[in-house]
Length: 360
Image 1: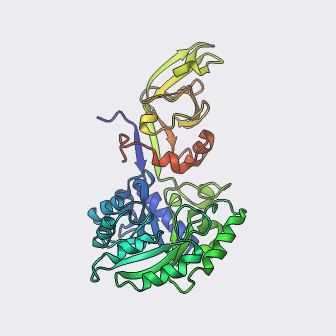
Image 2: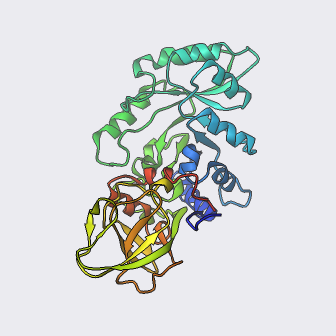
Image 3: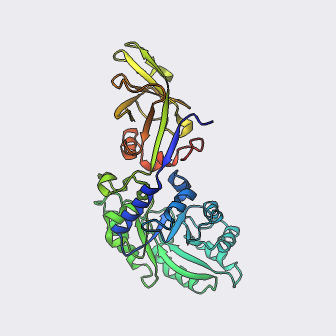
């Protein structure tokens, strides 16, 4: 039996966010990124919601990181194109990707040999990943023409596109962005389709939208743009993470709360204990003062985060009693705001919510 801690997932908000993204890039097709279990929201549920026949707009395909993620979507009945962003890790994975009708990212020369090992009757769609400055994955720009020519000669390649990834697109002023856009434009310009824009670039660099865009965090209602809130971008939170108060007590001035006694009461304080901790994915390094929404007000986290519980100061919120539910982030408290207080990013908070928290 669940102790009342849940992550509520709003499929209508998810569909709204995709519609907002399409309005920003009306001429581009969309790879909806559902890797990392849909950024912690549930990949199958999110892909199903985005593909719903009554949705205002649907994605043209989905993007995942691993073969297992792609396989799960196929087994769940997702028929749209699925892009493996990290490409195949072995010859065996290339074979499975072909059987599942996936689109493979090619970012290393030896992956071409793996493609060549497929039977000539087997075909697979391919995107060449170019390293334009991220220096994580990708073919060096000087080698792109050679790689493209090799792939074009393979009967196993059903279609060939080209892509790259921004390093600093959340920061509109960073010079790396225009450098990457310019460099990408020189790499095999005859190859179509082309894909460059991630969530932040969709807003910050419209000239990078090209044939396909790859929104990730924006789908889930967090802001991809530095200095702009999700609300300002017309994005709605998809996950609302809540936990109930399971105990309350008064502590006197000077008394500590939590492990290592890192927090002491500066006044007589009413402390509420919530049924959530770092085993649920709430970050252990969240400092005292991290905001938590409850009963229409904000209560500060006090003391260290425990494995299964946290404590908050509800002295000034008399309505907050046992069985009231607090919101860790969501519809009333933006995940970006919580992440900034903790010293991390919304991506990490959303993806680290553990499997023991039910997604409803």
